[in-house]
Length: 501
Image (cartoon, rainbow, N blue to C red; front, side, top):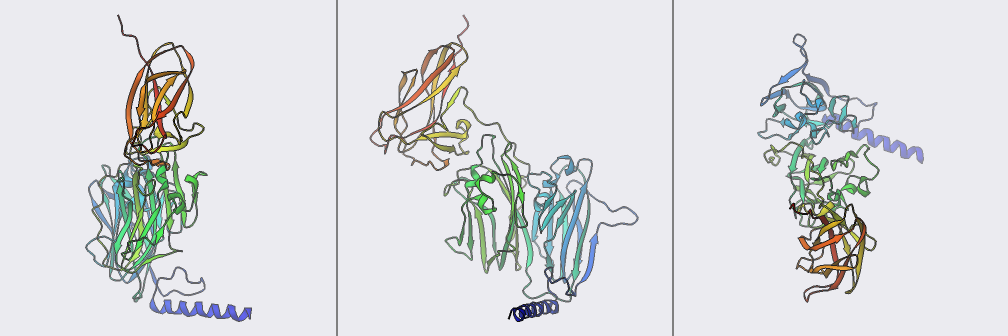
């Protein structure tokens, strides 16, 4: 029985193979012992007399290939050179635009910055990036996405930078008598939002036609070094064929890219998913996910989105860019004009209130990360204290280096459960209680969209050098408040210089 099953399986495989061969179909997965009817060809920068390099001047678009079909491109290879080329850390990898046109179409089916297409985001070269479909190996940029076309293919590069770039290339494919009627065209589209829009998902792909979503390269960066990477809380949402409710909903960005827990163990590369960048100093993440083994098909339309921060409000302000890979029928939905905003975002130092006594991490508190759209939470974090009644308090120890007058300034966060908060230093009240109630609903899930109340000066106290205690106590609440909670960013203890006589 086992032998018969194996024979039947092999017979079925051979029957499918025969059908593919007769149709002249794309056949990279044929058994190695089966023949392929395609006639191999290669288009390259080869020039026996003048050298194999093609210069592309700033502002110039150069057509690298015009190829007659029917055919399937199976491998694209490039390398770049030049005294100011991308290997020297400049932004040519983003300033070079790769475009591909199939069958004399008016708008490109592939349009992306050169580096991003090959998995080198942020304008940053990445060596030894190895997947089944795009690779970067020892300065060689490779694509193994099969790219069928029936009439013609045109491949071009535009140099949008300020330096001449020199390109070497060769494109290897095979010609066939015809392609199957069901053969779909390869597409790749770059998008960028810098910054992402609060309250709105980031769109990876939106297209109409029939085909499948084949995968994405995703590049995400925060704006300050204090950013806690909480944009990774975002879930993917995939809407198929015009549906109002997404068929596919995720559990987190790092989960979608098949990692977990904010990629705590660092970069990894697997055949169909990986983390290529994890730069915590610059709050950068680069990931890929291919859906060639788990296709996401669409018959009329697909919209692929991902959140940037806490559901459902997208509280994380970040720089997002992506290259979506997909196959579909033509004509395709034309791309929006490719963004001229390509330079990597310059990361800023973390915002810290001078003299801040921070409350995040205090025993009895829950962590609360400030939405980066507000840009004014000290260390981008606060402590949430879920007190039940007046009289509850929290005490922090702090030190000052010299004796003298110190100005005490409260930095609280407003919310609809807010209490009246009284500050005290070494057991003595400083100033009057501050009402922290606002009508904004409490949002204490990791990324918080509640707004700071601003700096509230409480008064000046005289301190000796050394250790002191700062206490925040709930004295009550106003009639509108739903509770006695405290959402405390920090309290600043600022030395007051004595005016000169």
